[in-house]
Amino acid sequence: MKKLVDFLLFGAIFIAVCAVALCMETNWLLGIPLNHWSFYLLVFGATLVQYNLHYFFKQPTGFTSARDEWSIRNRTTQKALLVTGAICIVTSLWWLQTRHFGVLIVLALIASLYSLPLLPFGKRRLKEYGYLKIFLLTLEWTLVTVWFPVDQLAQDPTSYWLVFSRRFIFMFILCLLFDIRDMNSDRAANIKTLPVQLGLRRTYLLANISLLAFVLLSAWQLIRQGEFVFFHAMLLSAACTWVMITQTKKLNNDYVYLAGVDGMMLLQAILVGIGTI
Image 1 (tube, rainbow, N blue to C red):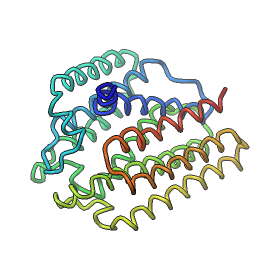
Image 2 (image 1 turned 180 degrees about the vertical axis):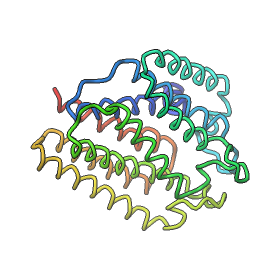
Image 3 (image 1 turned 180 degrees about the horizontal axis):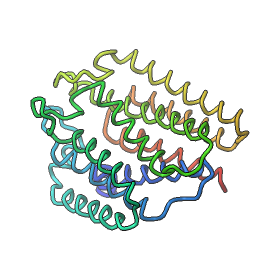
């Protein structure tokens, strides 16, 4: 059982499912039809490739985690996952429209620069620029799971930007928690992330303030649209996320973050999906 859990979490299959779920949530929130199956195949495959590529080329830091050890022991499995993800991407491209490719190139470039030492400034990666790292990662997740599914369909602009802003805040909270997890290794590598600069207490305060902003935006949506079901889904999602924030103060291991923190994405999508029934 543990091997299966490790495969799903460390092989990035679980987070790829979370990415697809968030894309579907966007359509439900905006009341638009779900995308073609090829779109979700693309998101799944791209997430699978991005995360496995990151750990395949990850540079040793002296702070080895369970995920790092799994990656080292399972190179063949990772290669198979990379090939699987690439096949998913190539298969889905047939159904994409021309205007999609420009966005895909930009997103792929950001993802590559995040994980691979391709920047001309001392061969560094984007993730080594602490402040830039969290905002670019948050923005990329928001673009993929909000902008890309909608793709310029006729929408009430206020509703769209409300969903976009709330998703950005939600992903910022999750990314911030992962920066807390990596705080010691980032400090040792002189990567000035928010937790390294602010300290734990103020970083957790920032996470809680951001969560409050998430709830307030949800309340605004309730006032505008009267969607009590979606408001209750977001409120329950915020409560569970707050529980995970408190858990990260007690436990700092990959399972808490990859199953619990990342799992908040899937939980939120499920709650919204239930609300559409």
